[in-house]
Image (cartoon, rainbow, N blue to C red; front, side, top):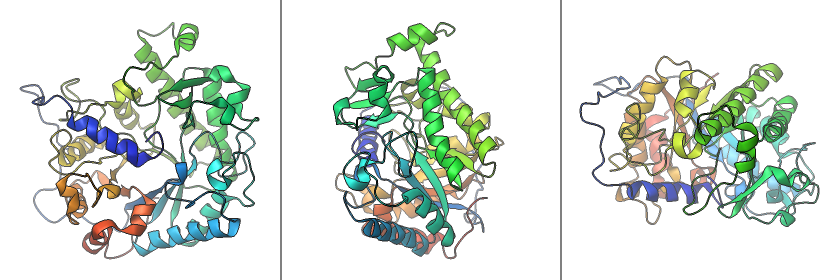
Amino acid sequence: MAGVSRRAFALAALSTLTMAAPGSAAPAGRPHRPGRPHRPGRPRRAATEMRGMWLATVSNRDWPSRTGLSASDQRKELTALLDKAVHYRLNAVMFQVRPTADAFWPSPYEPWSQYLTGTQGKNPGWDPLGVAVEEAHARGLQLHAWFNPYRIANNTDPGKLVSSHPARKHPDWVVPYGGKLYYNPGIPAVRTFVEQAILDAVTKYPVDAVHFDDYFYPYPVAGQTFDDDAAYDAHGGDFSSRAAWRRDNIDKLVTEIAAGIKELRPGTRFGISPFAVWRNATTDSRGSDTRAGVETYDDLYADTRKWVQKNWIDYIVPQVYWQIGNSAADYAKVVDWWAGVAEGSGTRLYIGEALYQAGAAGAAPAWQDPAELSRHLTLAGQYPQVGGHVYFAAKDVVADPIGAMSRVVADHYPQPALPPG
């Protein structure tokens, strides 16, 4: 999620959902597209399944706890989070290493992240990504390097970027929008640069996967326009609409990153964790039985369904951050829809889980029940297409709000499981 924290935008998206037009429903006569769960019976269990957690670094959400810690203290905090993942019988960590066009490794393309030292471009005295890969693997954990492709800064002042920042050297690449700065996805040179910056980490480190979250074109901001007129005039002539051109820009990023990974490190996978609603059924009969205020296809220009069905990515983790029975986006209905999309595709399906909602002030009553999250796994376990779950996020795994994570482990993770290969 964009902005100060992914949680804030997840909550904002939830608010948008609940404000969607009441009474909307799937068109009459639309056939249900089931994900073909096992019914009835006990949820299936496998010796191999995804049990992941996101470890967010943007604005020091999960790690490091604050800027300016010594290299030794940063490393201790990081390894403590990895130890906690092992404690809860998890087997993968999605480690955010490029939150705002910066780097958690010595990159020749971008500056050191400000979230390490408090000063963008300042060497922290160690290599967080290199150490994270080594320490994760020593514990039997996969390390998925998590990159945000286009976000530059959580403010609109280029002068706050280090003087050597590529965004200052190429101001024509930058679009201010919604109080933030973004690279323009419609400029081919931007896409080339972003791909080079990401693939540098793949070249240097044996990461188990490259991971994107839900940020492509930014989430809509009321009353504001993402100004890509010049890029569209220069590069959009072959497309029927600006929306089709924007989707093609993101499709190119996805396919080119996938190709680059396979060339540089064939064993490394590529996964994406999108906002969970591709399109509502009221917009498109192929969509989900939801009434979301945001649709990735139309608002973020991310055709997530196509990526799965064309097997452009190795895995997908839709952020199904709603409770069972949510009136606008029911966890059960969204999981069912994704199971149907993934069936026979060759793309593995894992479900993104909103651990941060458990016990949170202002969350729906269902989230005050420690068993809600466990019920999610029971429900999803009925679908053979669902190969595991990923929890947002590391700080909440450690805090274990209202015992929800402990309940998941007790009910569903009695033994360790191998991560998907």
